[in-house]
Image (cartoon, rainbow, N blue to C red; front, side, top):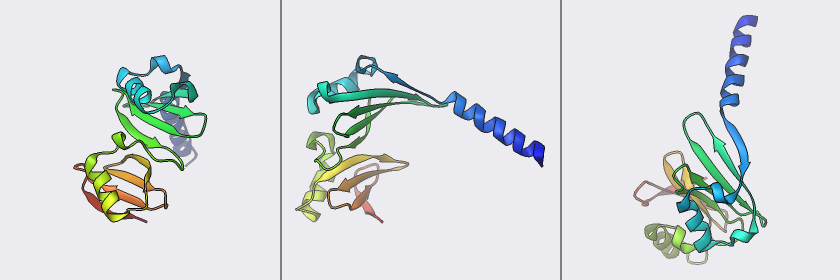
Length: 143
């Protein structure tokens, strides 16, 4: 039994050692990510950028001084945007999702948008979480 726990502990340590997060400069993120930041955010307000290298993938996290954050995959594609209490720029939200929110929640706006496992999620300023499929069609309210 003692040997079993030792093996598990060694395996966990090995896995975490392979995943490395490091602080990098904004210049080191892929060009598509730079373009999104330049078009929709103030790059001078970036607090820091991290590169998280996992076993199978890499992720860039851009954190702003006001708490907003962006996540990009290794190709520089936006995977998550969290604007805290402010509205996510509409150009970053697919048209079908914007239309759905406008039609069904006319007094609300999206504060967070991103992919969570298999589905896309939009968090509204009311705190409501909406789930959408890969075609951006509404699936359900996540409670």
